[in-house]
Image 1 (cartoon, helix red, strand yellow):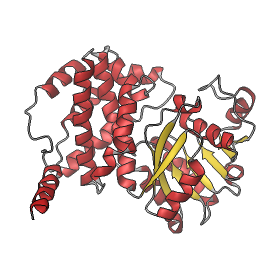
Image 2: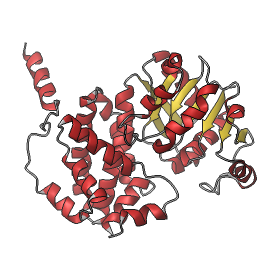
Image 3: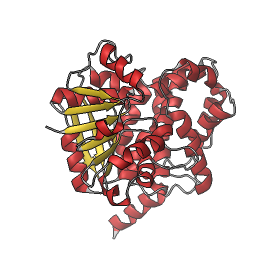
Image 4: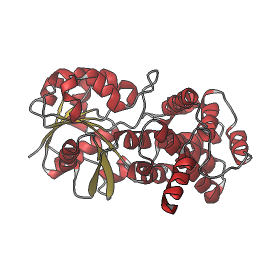
Length: 351
């Protein structure tokens, strides 16, 4: 029986706790306060009022109790609080503890991925135990028993396999990968596209326009991933295309919801105030915009979403400007490297 600590009572943290408990794991779910822990024990999760929390989930507000003899710790917290939370956990990690980041975001200010944030806050000897979980994972569907798949990535194949063994559950199939950068960026950057897809739906643009947006957006975030060292093929997998499809198409996506509400004329402040959960795409857009500026990378979709969020550009005008842009080769963009990669492969095929 696996012993797993889950840090964070978010929708995803709660869902993973329930899945693992149903599988037979001994799960300890960490809540921020004694009051929250008591509420969860008595009333269950407000996020899923129709799902009783299994008795196998031990809820605690004490970090040392949550991490006691844990084989793995799952960090299911918003990206904005990852550094704070992993610093609380760090002293309780051992050389064999698998550290799984389940957060799909980037850190404001540093522009770093969550695995990088974790690595900076833990004992350097334990960095080989870090892995990241991503893919098309709408928690509401998964906790209600609907089938889904994901990918767990680590620079260590052994660590990835350990995490895979722990996380794989009935109706939840986990694949492995070693491209941590690509898997992590795919999970984070797709939220930008979900915002744009929500805007398209809110404006009533139809499926043709949304499909074009999603496809061009995927090419754009793949280019950023390559510039940061990712394997471009990763973006055609579960953490890229798979997650893009799920979050751009589903009303269950928080980022899609934000986009729809923006198109309806609400301000970003109004929308965020009305939400109980975090829409990671808002901060991720800012980080991606900063990275594009630093790299001199052409990212027109990210630029327009940034202008809608942070410069009050009318979503309809943003959409019109994107559709009216100068079309080039599909793989061509300033410093994208995608076209040169394609051309190099063609040249090698001829020799």
